[in-house]
Amino acid sequence: MKREIFSSLRTGSILSVQGGFLLPTGDSKRGFGAGTAQFEPFAAFDQLFRENTFLQFEAGADLPFDTSVAPRSMFWRSTVGQAVAPDHMLGRLFSPMVEVLATRDFKPNASTDWDVLPEMQITISRRQHVRTGFGVREPFTNTASRTPQVLFYLLWDRADGKLWGGWR
Image (cartoon, rainbow, N blue to C red; front, side):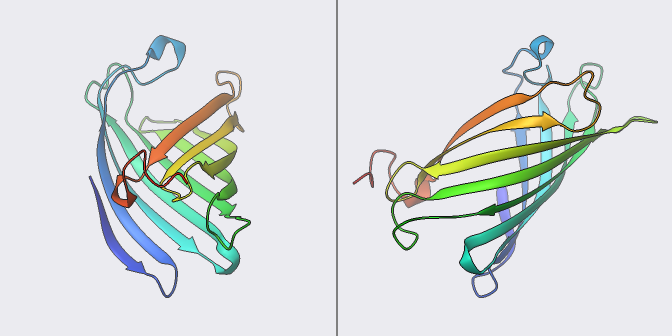
């Protein structure tokens, strides 16, 4: 569930809070998922500047139901990017961005894992309601036990129309 706390079209700002349940669908032994269901609350602030440059900040926590399988942790994410479109922001939209991520377990003497994630998001429908994104998350600290990850996602903003509509 996600709720807008504040937004201003005039200033290009939005603040929201979200809470979600993450199901243990991955193989935690291979580094996919935590191995237990989790509750993930977080807050996000986004700022859009002139010429479609944007900043996003997020802070939250991963709260597993079974802490013997996965520890509780907190996270911070910050992204800077630029939306570019050849047709006055209509049609295909390209958004290169760089994200800095940090995670820290709620354990005594835990260290903070810092990562950098260069990525690209592209709208694949002319209506811009279906987007794909991809990037490579590279560990910056504690690199001995962590390897780079290739990430991919597909987003559909169903409030803007049916999945198969708005492609021409």
